[in-house]
Each structure stands twice: as C-alpha cells, then as structure tokens.
Image (cartoon, rainbow, N blue to C red; front, side):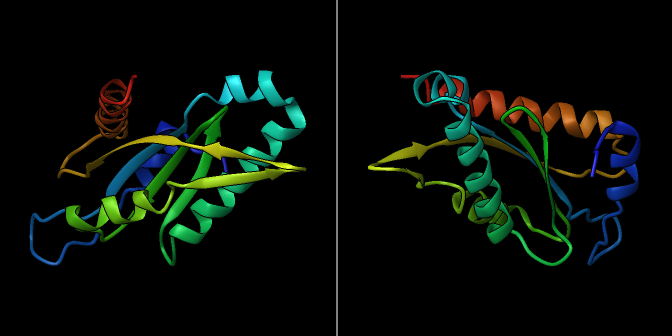
Length: 143
C-alpha cells in the first residue's frame, strides 16, 4: 500500500471514547545506520534487515493497526485507539532485532518518534510532528 499525505487523511479517522478525545497515534520508525549495513554486508544482507524488521513490525502491531514501509529505511505506523502510554510499548517491540547472516548476527537498531492525532489535524501536520519526534529521538541517541 502506498501511503502519502492525500490518502493518509482517510486513514486518520480516530474513534474517540469521549467527545474531542483523539486516540489515534502516528509513528515513524527508521532503521539506524541502514546505509552502513548495506556497505558493510552487501545488498542481500540489507534486504534481510528490511525483511526481519518488517516481520517484527508486523508482529508488534495487530488488528486495525497499519504499518507500511514508506521507502528506504523508514516505516509508517498508524495505531488507532492507542492511548499515549501504550504507544511506547508497541515501539519497544522493535528493539533488539538481530538478523542471522551465515555465521554472524547483524544487530538492527531503530529510532522512532510518534505523536497523537489532534482534532482538525491535517495529514501534513501529523507527519511533521511525528517526524520531528523521530529526529529528536535520533539526536538524543547520537554517540
């Protein structure tokens, strides 16, 4: 499924438990150092990294959740009806991923950021806030 700002709006139809209470979260996850993994281990290993990360992402989400690869090493995750305290639980399931490559394991780390849908949000505003949270997370984890 191709997700862009135009059809993201149709996916962002939050159901609220109380009037005015939006519970849909939009997350962005990005595999850290993916290009370095490609250079170090080759494109076939890069494909395995993407496949394993996507498998883990599918396992971490359920039901009405939507998780798609946006391109490159970035993934979009829409979590309908998730209160803020549960979003980090889902994202924590994307940590400690390893890919078996013959006689070695490749550790796969990701950065993530998320935001809650707010009444009257445009898809662009939601994307901008989630991406901002992702970049803040990446900046906090630079060694």
